[in-house]
Amino acid sequence: MCGRFALTTPAAIIAEHFELLDLDELELPPRFNIAPTQSLPVVRLAQNGTRELAAARWGLIPAWAKDSAIGNRLINARAEGVGDKPAFRSAFRRRRCLVPATGFYEWRRLEKRKQPYFIGLRDGGLFAMAGLWERWHGSDGGAVDSYTILTTEASTLVAPLHDRMPVILAPQDYDLWLGHAPASTEDLSALLRPYPAELMRAYAVSTRVNSPRNDGPQCLEPVAETDLT
Image 1: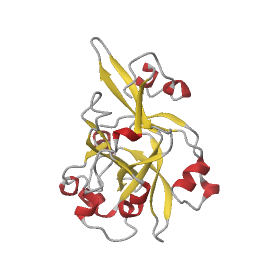
Image 2 (image 1 turned 45 degrees about the vertical axis):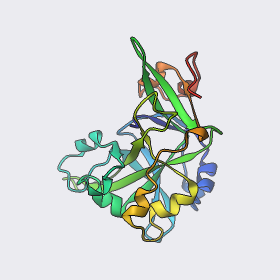
Image 3 (image 1 turned 180 degrees about the horizontal axis):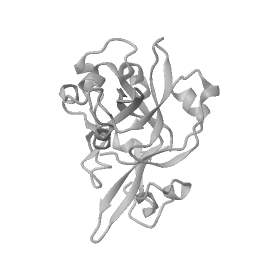
C-alpha cells in the first residue's frame, strides 16, 4: 500500500529528470506529507506526444462514476490483474502516468503503537511511481483529473513494514509506461515488480506524519528506532 508520500525535489531537477519543457510553469513547493484527496502534479503524455506535468487529485475517479467520493477508496491499484479491473482497465490501456516522489511512508506495528518509516532511494534522489489517471465529469459539467498509484508485493526491505509497496519505475522504462510507442499488456506487466531492496533505505520518523495537517521537514527527521537498512 502507499497512503502517504513526499516530493521535496526542486522544480528544475524534476523538469530535467522527466525531460519536461515548460520550466516556467512549474510551481512545486516541497511537500513532506502528501495525503489522499490532495492535488499534486503527475507526468503524462500530452496530445502532441511530449511529456507534461498536470495537476491531479490523488484517488482515481473512474469516468463512469456517479460520485467523486469513490476516489477516496481508489488511491492504490494492485498491479496483479489491473488491466482487467473495471475501475482501472481503461486507464491502464490509455492513461498511464508517472507520480514523482522522493519517498513514501509505511507504518510498523509495535506492541502498543505504530511506528512510521520513510522509505526512499539510498542516494535520496527523485523517482517515479507507476500511476494511472482519469478525467471525470461531474453533474455541473466540471472536469476532475485524478490518479491512483500501482502497488506490488513488498521487497525484502519493505516487507517488515507491509506486504505491499508502490511500483517504482526505472528511468529507462518511462517511455514504455507512458505510451510513447504501443506496448503489449505483457510488456507493461513486466514493469510492475518490486524495486531492488539494495537500492533503497528506510528509517523511522516522527509520528507527526500521522496527521495530514503536518507538512513540514520535521516529518522526515529520523527518530531513535530500528533502521531497517
